[in-house]
Image (cartoon, rainbow, N blue to C red; front, side):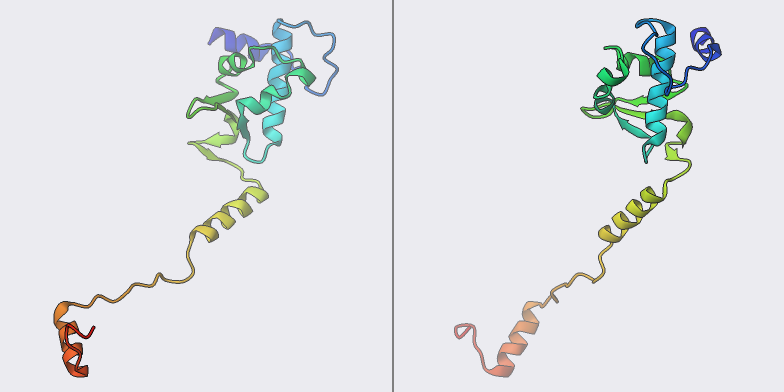
Length: 149
């Protein structure tokens, strides 16, 4: 907790500023990297992405090789889900009780489309059941015997 509060008290480093002079491995570089990841997630529609997708930006933003470790070290900013084969990174401030607080209009349209596709318009056809007594009654009515079927 002490380390997190010290990190939070550091001066803000904008993700849009020139970061070429920030030395790798310093807390300033980590503060900048957290700002960049925060900005990327805040621009995403669902405020989350896969850990693998963030590593694609490693070269452009000079992220360290321990990007996943950095995300885990800042649980106040990011939530890293370890479900499945791939890790997802969530922007913690955008979620409350595992629900997105402010949904993007595009996301609302996507959810509406998903619900329409999953809902069937026409009722399913069911074949009426007939018992053997009913079949015999029909056969005798039309003069069909069991051999003539």
